[in-house]
Length: 315
Ligand SMILES: [Zn+2]
Ligand SMILES: [Zn+2]
Image (cartoon, rainbow, N blue to C red; front, side, top):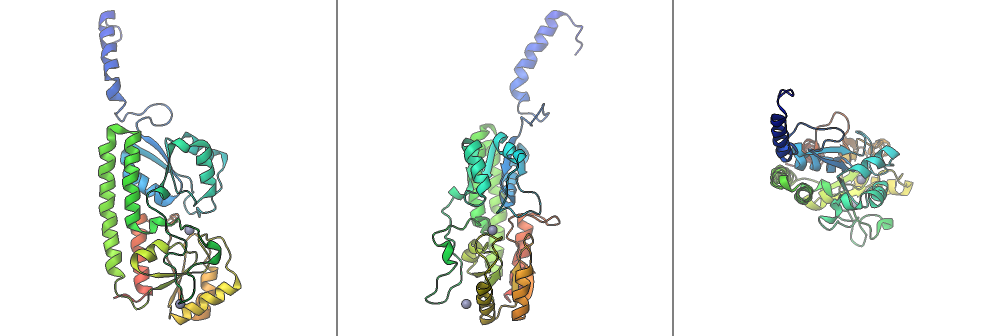
């Protein structure tokens, strides 16, 4: 447009631009500061980032509070990260998993948060645990505690995606149908993964898995495995010598050929037990974060399945 046109023509053009305002707000051409066309989402750790990205698609800008390769349980937030939580349009977190995030959300984003722990009741800390007759599964100090590692059951992650799509739709009603459709597409992928697990772990010579921290309760519960953990629900607690002796005894008793360790935690303890009972070690990734060279939730879960099938001699 030539701005030296007559005043009347200029006025008409201005009116036309104003009329276009509503359309421009939905277009992709961006603006100053945070992208006003996209929902600004902060995820508390990797699996929640994965779900938010899949459901949000190009309508969401998703960031993760945890750096790649870092263990999220004991995350501390610096002022910049607290600022991220404060400024987000939506914070996706799991209450009870990261105390620092729980606190930041309560203080700064209570009305803009989505707690995935509310989607379905959480399992008890002892779920999927291994116990002999007359014994308690799990650790005495976790009596009454809930297990936060729900993303290791793909069907639960699908339920989280559906509810997150509803939440996106409330924040951004114009695109509600898109969020629903993307959650449905993710559900299809997760159902396929679930079917592969059910089939792949149907017939195995052993069902006990010896792991570092007890992150695999949901996986064990869903696919009828039994988890024997060196430490409890959190990876940073050093196991007591007595616990090491118990786990070594269990591993021997059940003929375990593999002691699992994690990508984001030192393999030292797993190696000690493996050496003692003559087993090998392998990575079983609890997907609390991605290490640098890994793919995504779906590909790491498939790698885990192959690792389990080998370790448990599944046919
Ligand atoms: Zn964990
Ligand atoms: Zn046993």
